[in-house]
Length: 343
Image 1 (cartoon, rainbow, N blue to C red):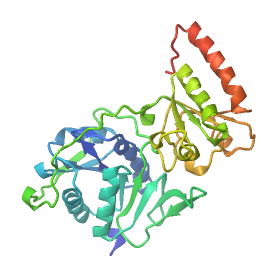
Image 2 (cartoon, rainbow, N blue to C red):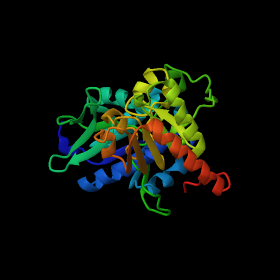
Image 3 (cartoon, rainbow, N blue to C red):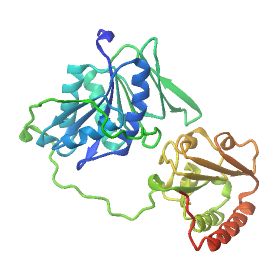
Image 4 (cartoon, rainbow, N blue to C red):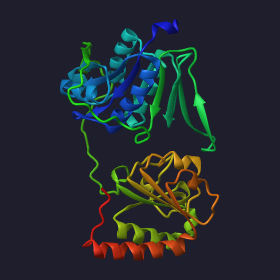
């Protein structure tokens, strides 16, 4: 393998029913920085059916080139058909870096492509950079239970690939009218040749709290003491119009369901305001919330690691501080006519 034959940074643009997943736009922002450092074009590649209207949006979010494979067999995601599409593009154009969102489909596709291309894949990456001199992707992720950050390199194979968790990177502001190149490739696919069939698409209609879309989050840690004390967080959250989340310890203790866990093995969130209450700030939790606009930490240990990432810190017992905050916010709501704006 001649590594010099491979050039360019690519992002897999995941779409469902003609709507681009947010993580793909975030990765275009991260990919733009890598491509600029390496002085190569940034490309988004897109598979599906009737997807041409999406190309200009991808360019507006930072891509120089959009590669498309449009075919009826690609209407719904399946490993086999999508892998064949990616292999067609990767073998013809030889990108040096490919980034995928760490979604169920993104992780499935990336692992399948890595196997067929005989290359490496770093999963659930939380930081990306490049060694410019050696043109190496530096994909970093928590390891050993989140106690260290490991930077993984793929020195001898191309393309270098990584999956990146949603909400970890920041999307660029779209530029209307931005110019780029659109390249469409034809692929030979037959539905009868596919080993799996999509029989029905069932949408999730359960009403769960959605941490990913929350503007204000109150996250509690094991330092709340017990389930009864943890209920104070719900009162605080209701007062300020927030969503409640928790650390892994809290979920394992049964105080919260898993879909409300924030951190490496839970949700990654980027709210406007994040209250970190009675939690230490271990790496595996911080990677899930460090991109919040404002982080307000409450902890009785002045040396707790959470204060290292906090915008504001309150040193004290949460059981004493929360009732005072609830009282103050209730008074503020009364003065503001019942609602608090965080715009």
